Image (cartoon, rainbow, N blue to C red):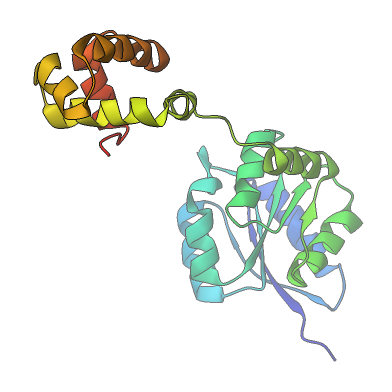
Length: 219
């Protein structure tokens, strides 16, 4: 005979909690209810003490989001977490998955879907609502946002990068001195600086110094 899946329920609605208790108690010999909690504090306390296999967690607990305790709850309990929530905020649900939840099921789901999802999560499977799955995949596959400053800096030629580094190193030295260090004429330096200002979106040498220092353009 296999060991039953030990389940802890976390929900702040007494009627919902009672219904889930009855659902699990009548769900089969492979399911065992070991405890309940109704807010973030009791969830952490009971989870750490009971060490269940699966925690069925509501996202909204007495006016607070259980998202804020999810990493700590996973660590304290060692359990797999399945979100069972009426919350339809895709961003919040996706965040829960990214923080470690193995399943997300709607409170409107049929009883057999809830029970089978608990079983799947206990086996280490990921069990997500189809809409959430699509949203999560979309976020994970989206290309990273381009950094406009990185693009600006990349537009500089090696020679222009060298000029910027010398300006920073010079720390207020006159153009004549900087031009001498670069082995170019002073008018050439001024022309180059004008081009650099345009590329980086700065107005003068002071702004260039601040910009270059902020973005590590010192070498």
